[in-house]
Length: 179
Image (cartoon, rainbow, N blue to C red; front, side):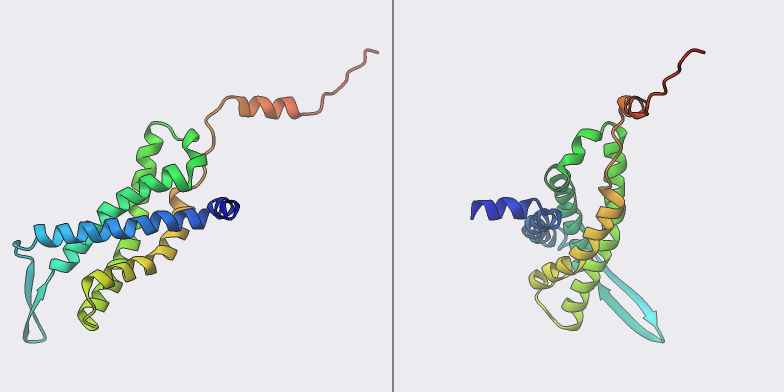
């Protein structure tokens, strides 16, 4: 049983899924906090559409976006140190900042997808927000995994001077005989 778990943990999408699984209760806990913290803010928009007055409550959208951002930061750190741990040794200085920025850009579209799914479930199908929220996250999971592999967690080249030296040393030696 232990060897099966070890073999499964060598599969990157399994590790990514575990980190994402940790992110779901973090996201729901953050959602709970933001629902409580933002309840008194005026987050209602009123506008006219085709001659009718329309009013929209944006509380859940804003609260969900804030909760997603909290879980996204936690997931980025866990993915960097657990899912893509072999890349840590090659990341130094500003590369961390660039990688975090790319992670934020990549997850922004996943956040929009997640929130869109949750909003449809809440407003169109009257699903409980604490069930709609994880459903949106699960839909965005697969999308985010592939985007992260292509954009965020691409292996970086080791910044080592020994790489060109190894190439030179690997060339075949040419023997020169005097005439």
